[in-house]
Image 1: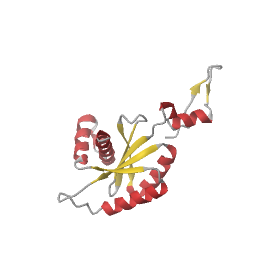
Image 2: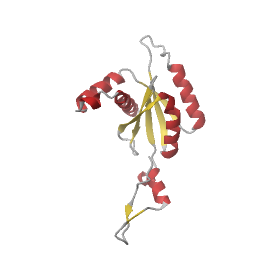
Image 3: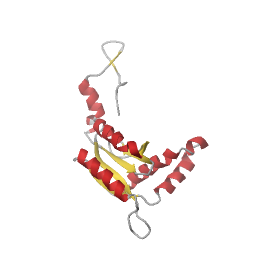
Image 4: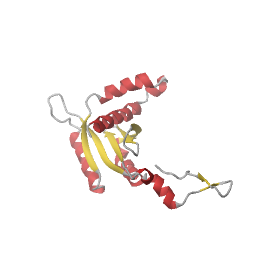
Length: 171
């Protein structure tokens, strides 16, 4: 999260001034909340991947965005440099017979590449059975405008948030 438009009122003058670099870093890294890092979830897809993140206190999981899967690594590298993230939860799908889906090898390669770049980032797997169906139901009941409900990326974001909520329930 870039805080470039972040302003605080000055008490000595009746104008807006920029905070010091140290104060900006404090807000960016959430040290004012005890330094807790976020947890991020990923719903990895063939074309699009949904992302969700917790608040700095790790109480609430919220959809973040949808990224084209081929741009996902670059997006996550930029995000992880800006935000303090302690763990990444990646959805795991198994077939009905318990075998991994064909896409699992690609997901494992992606995780290995990310862990090589960020060795301190913990990566966890979370079962994501039926998260897309649950996300569609959540969207159907909570999003009023039909055009917004039909956005393809919204299901991926909400699925990632559901994966993260389920993971947080197991902490």
